[in-house]
Every structure is written in C-alpha cells, then in structure tokens.
Image (cartoon, rainbow, N blue to C red; front, side, top):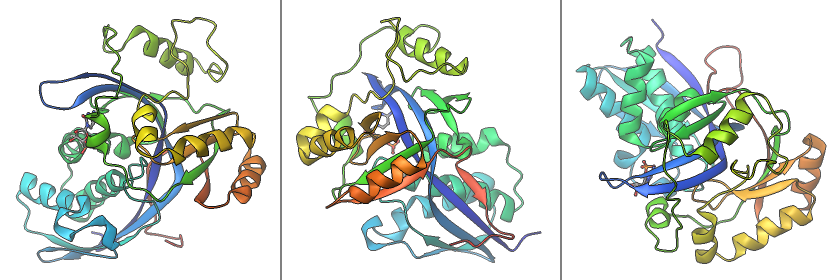
Length: 310
Ligand code: C5P
C-alpha cells in the first residue's frame, strides 16, 4: 500500500470553443476541443490518519477550504465514507483563473491519487461523476490528451494527436478573468444551431475531420464545417481587457500560424510550426509572461518514482 504519491497535473488549452444555449441548471452547453499541454503543477499526497491539510497553495488561490484540491478530497471522503486523511502539498506553476484549467487539473489529480492512496478502487466512471460535481473541466482533466467535448464539457470524444498542433507559445497577461462573468455577459453571442446526435453539424464536421487524421488547420473546403482556432468568448473577454486583442495580433505578426484565447481567458495561444519557432517567439515577448508548451498525451502523470518532481 503506498503511503506517498506524487502527481503532475498538466494545463489544458482550447483550440475551438463555442457556446450554445443556457440550460435549466444555469450552465451552458458548449462545444470545444481540449488539448493537454506540458505546463504542469506538482502535487504530493501523504497518508494521514484523519483530516485533509494543504500546503503550498499561493495566496491568490484563496482560502484552503475553498480550494478545489481540498474540496475534491472531502468529496471522496463523503462519497465513500472513508475516515482516512491526507497531507497534500502543491507546487503551482500554472497561472490561476487563466483559462488553463489549473484548478480543475489539481482536482483531477487529487481524485486519482487519493483513490489509490486510500485504496478505494472507485472505477473511472465514478471519478468522472465526482469530478463533474467539482467543475465542468475536471472530467477532461482526468482523461487528457486531445479530445472534443460537448454538454458542460464532460461528454468527451478522444481524438488522435494532430501533427500540426504540437508546439504553442502561451502568453499569460496578468489579469484574472471570472468564467461565470464571461458566460453571463450579454455580449456573448450564443450559437443557436440545433444539436443533432449530440453535436451541431458544423462541430461534428470538424470533429470527424480530426478523427480521420485530416489536417484541419487549413480553412474548411466545406463551409458548413466549423474552423479550428475559434473562441466565442474572445469578444467578451477582449472587451473587458483590450490589451488581449493586441497580444493576439502580436502573436500573428510574430509569425504564429494561428492565435486565439484559451477558455474564458486571459491566456493567449500562439500556434507554432515547431519548438524552435515557439522559443524564438517567446524570447521576443516583452511585457508579459510567456511559456513554450508542447501537446502531451495525458493530463495526469504519476511522478512518485524515478522522476524529479520539480
Ligand atoms: O463548472 P465550472 O465551475 O468551471 O463553472 C464555473 C461557472 O462558469 C459556472 O458556475 C457557470 O456560471 C459557468 N459555466 C457555464 N457553462 C459551462 C461551464 C461553466 O455556464 N459549461
């Protein structure tokens, strides 16, 4: 029985994001493409007789009790009735409230790690359902890789890796964006297209092209197919923070094949040809934090053995 586990939780970016109608439960149906990327937080979990403690969470994440890590641990205790506890430490690198699902990834790592540490043996479906109680992005953060998502973001279709979508520059402007504020802003244009078999036909066209391994970065020959690199939330977040539109334009001028905002922002994604281009563009950025990231095939990685957790 392990007494200590270490997990990396990777950030996600969205390479397409459209918002459909508001639902009876207050959430919106959306259509999105998620990709896990190599920027990660490190969490360690040590077994304790009782109680959940968390150290290392930066102050901007707010009080420990409301942290998604602590909430995930309490939810697992409640769901299973276990009295076991854990001392959890967090090394945070993913910016908070940035559109990168950093907190959701931490919650996914906590569910996966404590399921093992406490020997609960919950199946993936249970973790998925508990994850969705914690946040719309948590189910994807349990899966990782490249995937299409519908519903609140929890109905997932895994996709094969797309070769032109491997290297990215991320720009991290120093503003925090409230996701509910963006979803509820009257400026958000919602796609009223009908959903057929779980997806709008335009999104289904994009997902099918990616599932067949086609290069979907080229403009669609079939105009009914949704294009990559679209984010309906840009209009709202850019209106709140006009600098973000300027940074997006800067990425395109710097030579990125495409640029877009991730999630509700403010992170901006520059799509690059290769690592060398991504590094050259990141080195030229002045005035905002930048990272070079690569697509990764999973959102969680066990780093308990044989790997420097830093
Ligand atoms: O699920 P999550 O905690 O990430 O959602 C934060 C807020 O974003 C929700 O309370 C809701 O206002 C909005 N949201 C939404 N539709 C979604 C996901 C989030 O309206 N699919």
